[in-house]
Image 1 (cartoon, chains in turn blue, red):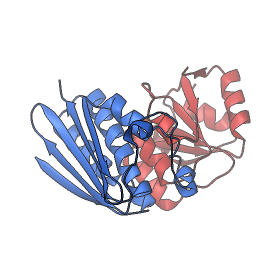
Image 2 (spheres, chains in turn cyan, yellow; image 1 turned 45 degrees about the horizontal axis):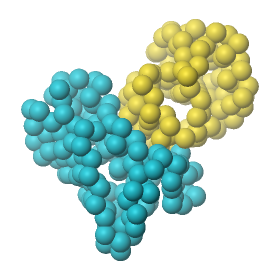
Image 3 (tube, rainbow over the protein chains, first blue to last red; image 1 turned 90 degrees about the vertical axis):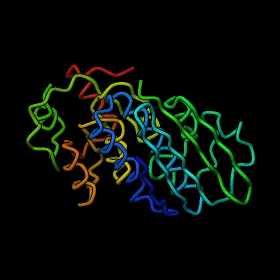
Length: 137
Length: 113
């Protein structure tokens, strides 16, 4: 099963709609609730990052019997130092991102804690791609 | 402690979820930082001063069904619609975060950590 969503820059009102939709789909597929929670927490953080730090992007989701693969690709300033960005507490978030309850430097670490595979690639001035996989068993 | 008792204790107003007020709550977590809420392994009552769409979205993602919003902030219609769609109880109180936490703690609600 393949799902695709568009993420719009600064659209905090709709931040999380892709994650909500994926959650509903996984429920319908009878995926175990703890696995669903790991998937949606990671995807939600990635979605919020794309809205908060970039100029929009796409969320692509592929689900098979064994796993879910999620790719969040944004067009934006990119991440100059990915290792630094992975550190809990490091943040470059703008005040409006903090006003939404995010921007404390927990996004990428939260993603890492919840997925089985995480790959972050970024080109400064072009954008960032976050690839995540969660196994169902 | 039931959500109905919590509403009375906090002089609260139930914005949505009247049907679930007899549900029991034993633990609570207070935070305005949604990334922190997303790290929870349990499903406590959330006490927060953050009143926007991400409060409700985060609860949905973190499987939290019970929220107390402090300092008399009023959730908008979109928030309440999303909360109702997800069978959540949203209670508002004019009390501060500190007072809310104190009253609940005194009444036997346990901290998560």
